[in-house]
Amino acid sequence: MSLVLSASERSPRVFNLFLSGSLDSNTYTDLEEKVDYLIREEEARVINFDMAGVDYISSMGVRVVLKTEKELRKRAGHLSLMHLKPQIRKVFEIINALPSLQIFASLQELDDYLAEMQRQTMEGRA
Image 1 (cartoon, rainbow, N blue to C red):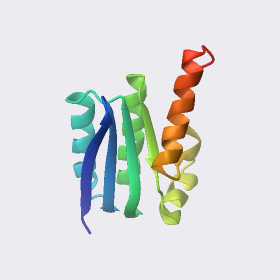
Image 2: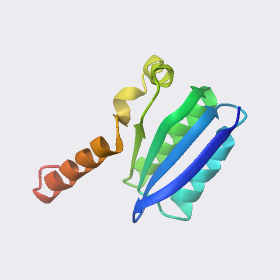
Image 3: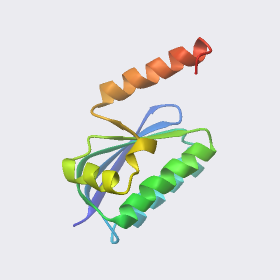
Image 4: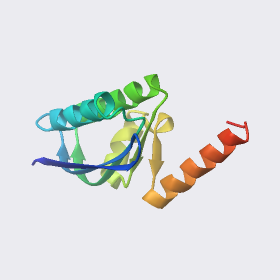
């Protein structure tokens, strides 16, 4: 199965990346190249992976997700995951990756979280 990717810039340096299909050893390089481009060329600070269309993820797919989080963190950035199907969530639970990743049920939930973080920062609490 293939992997379909599309990206949209929500605001400067904040990107939503929509994934659909299988994120495995045959397709992980597509995601890796897209993320590398967003970080290097677009200077992304926040990337939101919308994984509603992902039906399967292998260890290589997980590796790209964790690598993306690490690269963004180095730049004081942030990675979040949205709309994980139960089988995809289970993979992240098995490898104990979920505590370090932000996972949101919807784009609205993500927006509410980001608004709260910004409010706390402006008030000097974060």
